[in-house]
Length: 457
Image (cartoon, rainbow, N blue to C red; front, side):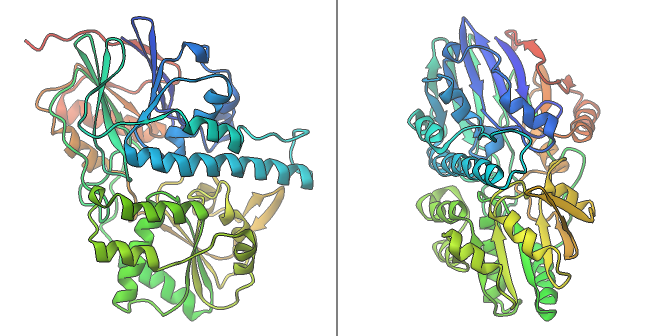
């Protein structure tokens, strides 16, 4: 079996790992590159092999940096199966349609206002492309081994992180490869801990937070402090948030704060039709998270759902305290950028920026203290208070990744550290080498390696 790293190698985005075995080609994850322009340009490059030679795709979870490239392959002719857990399939239906629609809207907006360098500006893919991709989804239950191509089977286990997220074990001719996907936290308030795995020949492990630990600060105390002081100056707290995972965790904490009367009685808005639909899935897949029925109901009803563009625009006319949660999580697109144009220049407001911000994104620029960010061809000043918040991450931190790795009863023949910025990946590589004594490396984009059979004796 040969593996080629077509994304999330040397960067934290664009997850794609191509497996070749007996003239069969399987892609583990199918993610978009996000962030820096030189990374986003990879999305427009021809795929590594003719798409008609690709036999199957497996998704570890639904986030766009793991699933968002699928409509491109389908538009270019891919017609094979796309395997994922049932919850991931449902989330992908929401995310891909929204992504295609958003790209069409942004291209149309750029053409109408003339700020694109391309004439005309074109979407990477459309909502119709996404709709065609959804027809290829094939749900596969956790712990159910399935042959996906001749001579190759997969087994999925819970990875925590978000609804439906899974680690993927691939077996081909006796050689085993485990792909961690994105690992969740062992004590996450919403999601169960990632399942431990006892053995594998080869391992791909993510390293988003491979060089740091999450702060021990109580997220509810931090939220209460930020929201309260913003309300006292009659401002609005704007939270750029991923629609899947982060938005629901925020609403869970806000529900608890409201129950304890730890924050003022102010309106909370979830301004993302996609996040609204995702939130309702937590009720459908109640066996896949920790929340009780009461907690799930409370989380789903603490915020007013904003669906229409008209209602979204009206939010910007508010002059009384509120909390607005809006996609996207790194302020790269979606409704949050329209709120930024209105709310960021006013010092009474707060931009609460939770979680990891990939380099090159507006979120990263804001957290780094940029005096302005460019939106729709114009510089928007950042005068609002900026509060980074690292206590809401759905990713395991460095110590938690190491804790998961120690669950293996014997070292893999080799471990590849992926899905991290260069420093994060290299720091985790050193820890794995020094603390566990494993053979480990950080692959580069388009590196290709042979995975040979390992005799356990």
